[in-house]
Amino acid sequence: MITAGRIVRLAERDRAKVQFLLDGEMRGALAGDTVLTAMLASGVALRKSEFGPEPRAGLCLMGACQDCWVWQEEGSRLRACTTLIVDGMRLCTTLPENWP
Amino acid sequence: MSGTSSPRIVVVGAGPAGIRAAATLVEAGLHPVVIDEGQQAGGQIYRRPPAGFIRTPEELYGSEAAKARALHALFDRLAEEGRLTYCARSSVIAVHEGRLHVLGEGGVQVIGYDRLILATGASDRVAPVPGWQYAGVYSLGAAQIALKAQGVALGRRIVLIGSGPLLTLVGAQLVKAGADVAAVLDTSSWRQQTRGFWGLAARPIVALRGLALRAGLGRRYQAGVKLEQIEADASGVTALLWRDAGGRQRRTPCDMIGMGWHLRAETHLADLVGCTFTYDEPWRQWLPETDEMGRAGNGVYLAGDGVRLLGADGAEIAGGIAAAACLADLGRPAPAVGADLRKLARLERFARGLARAFPWPFEMVRTLPDEAIVCRCENITAGAVREGADFGGGEANRVKSLSRAGMGRCQGRYCQLAAVELVAAQAGCTPDAVGHFRGQAPVRPAPIGAFLQEG
Image 1: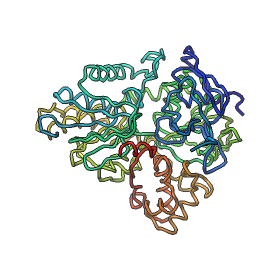
Image 2: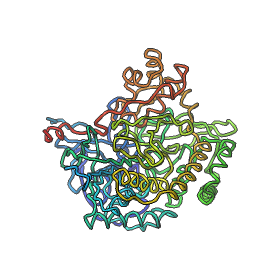
Image 3: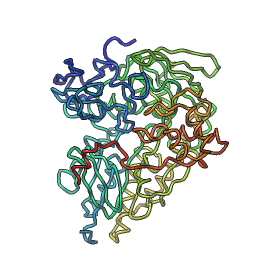
């Protein structure tokens, strides 16, 4: 059982810190992290499968499998493995409630 | 616009094949457009970390650092000097009548071409193992990208499964970086591995380097294993159940599993431009047909792992050859490629050796339990694919329509080979008779708004 995040930082730890909101909660990451790295630094999954009960955390990390799409609060989605985290990003693991 | 004096040439992909193709065209005085999904040119194997990362190429690429450095520097210089146009972070999502539909940050853009060089590369060839849908299962390539481009391990306790050079390499790289690698499990037996010996002898240094890396893994490495089940709880993977070469059942606790059996060529665009495909028996997958220079007809050229799975060195050579073919067809002076074609032939012998020594475990796939998930996108089971074959017969696209395997967001990239094996087994025919899933545009998910802007 994982207690903190899924990933382990092994190198390149000396980068500027950034903050983002995940499901309304403030999270920390490092500049240059992908959204996938940023989310899995403090969590175990990116989203829930639409077709099963299990959470998902990506598969290929090269933009091919499309397993890592997450929502942004304003309603658009992004592919977490090919998008870099930006300070102040507002991300959601599920469809935002006020989605247009 | 398309006068013979300035033909519009587009290269898709900026890995070793795309970079070398573009550079060869520039040397001949042409100005290619290079469309690439990466943040920076380099492709997967020579992928560069984002700005602000400080490890050197030697730390990132090991024995291949000099090649990576040279290709990066070459491409950056040509882009800086304005001798090519680089469209980074852009995906070609459709091709129609000499026009590419390119999805970038600003929406969809249409780019016409007279000649098209596809250097689309490859992704990991995976195989469904019961439980592979759970969070914490990644491809071997993913584990390598995470380490190289992000400096992270994707788990606290890692098990790698599969077969082929990347299995050993990723294991060694993770251990060296300080990750906890519990086991490296090869589905190919020692006996099977020796069958590829004569092919592997075509590149003795590469083969010996692989053996040395494996020796460094010590008792973590096990050959001839059978993979049975990935166990998980609500937060993801917790263990792998497997059998060793002696048939003893083993359970290795872990929170991350990396899997891969060499590569699967990325062929969706080749399919959309109308390439003919043949089933390659040693690689057990469909590959587009070209002549020895990479000509696919209609002004299209293919190079690199998207057409022949030779790895980075072969891709770079093939990129140069495809560009030379393109130049010759345009009636321009083209560099001589005789020596390069001979090099490719040697790399091909080595690759055939790899394919024999480290095969994709099709028997494992054929005997998957009905409830095992084959399509991770939509959680479609082996049983559903078998039912599709019972109802629709042994034809890939009918089974795709009936079961939806291959219709999810990855468009069959990660389930097609397994689905076809299951169909072949169920219908009592061979995979090449089953056929391959037709590619459909858009080949990457695209927001509908991008198309509205276009109109």
